Length: 255
Length: 302
Image (tube, rainbow over all chains, first blue to last red; front, side, top):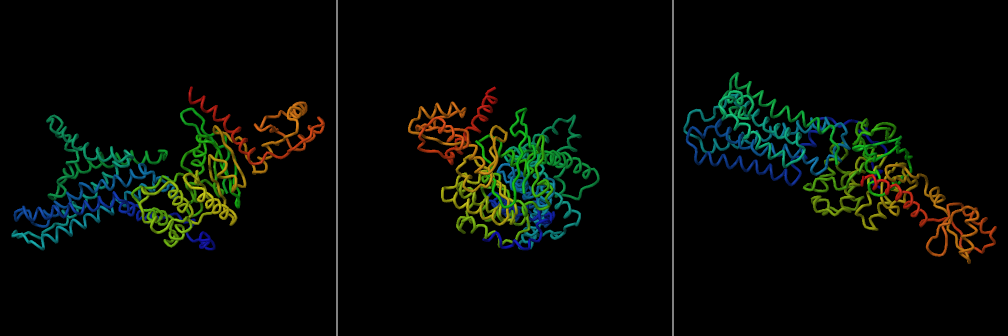
């Protein structure tokens, strides 16, 4: 019988799966389901659409690399986090946690692997955004003289923007452990909070608390105060829900 | 090797698993039997480290399940066949587990073959699977790491009679090669043919455990005579408390020898005298667990 095939020597049966291995597995989980596959295809299609629109409707100043890249990164960052949300919530909604945690009982390692996988996917998505932007600029060069100019710090900020969006998706997925509320609140809560910024008495404070703090990252090289706001917004919108999520995942009973 | 020592679990003040102790030896199949809601799943979840017991301990292969570095390679677990991503293909679900455990991808095909899921079925998404196919996928997933121990919760659910026979053969073979099997069921018939040892749970408590033969001895004796009334008097006189078996005979909680002696003392001609066998075991299972379940029901109603 085939169960006996490897019965003599079974290397690795007492070797803990490495974090790199778990991260690869989580990356696989993001793309191998029907929903994950179509979501990623939609992300790519939307980025492509934005490139085409910018090329058709944009003026010379819009059609330079850093502007096209800003548009593709921002577009990708809209739907990409939903992949992050589902990566966490599917374990509960689809109850695959019963399999995942049977194989890796240390749930914190699974959470870390999911975060690392999310980061990897954000980098891949950024790579696609950069590639699409570069191709479009090469195919239809703008008349501006800084067509290919892309300061390294701005490139880094674009990467950070994609990463922050993905982390926020993962954090919301972890905090709610259910796709519907996590996705609705991922999109809705920042809008509701930023609406508070209209109240002039607290608008100064709100600049430090709403996700609008991330917006300048793809547009210009940001300075000291902006970085401070990115940090405080990241603490509120990423670190806090992720901490709540890690706590819930570790103690929640998998039904 | 599985050992449960005084496992206890309470949910909201209600004790759903109460001081459950048993152990499973290598080379044997243990059937964990009880009606729905008796505490089987909760017990198995505690053994697999999914749920913390309020009292007691469980060990698998001499230690806590959670302490195993790569548990899938030592213990095959199937807690719920429906717990698979509906949008993932069957083969891909196994691929995820194989990569996690560090098992060669060749084994995926071997396991699919073993559980009789053909390549067309393996390519389909789990959403399109029947419960029986999910059970087969779940069993393939449990066996993927070539484990020494199998823990399966209601694996026969949704299998047709042919599938059930196939699974019995698979588990028997696994145990005969030195493996330890613990499987739960709410149907005696599903496990008694394959289990070397039965652990019966009702209302969170173990109500009986032992080999099939040991339990059968407790199931009593069936006796019939030419004169039923005289037989009943003779048995009652011998303080054996006969219960009617509904067909003119009696079931007695005693060895056939004691029943025969009582009949002889009463000068009665017996037409049948035998250990209760299967029907008795089923009756025993029912008697043992129905009482416990009634308690549970009243608790719920309160």
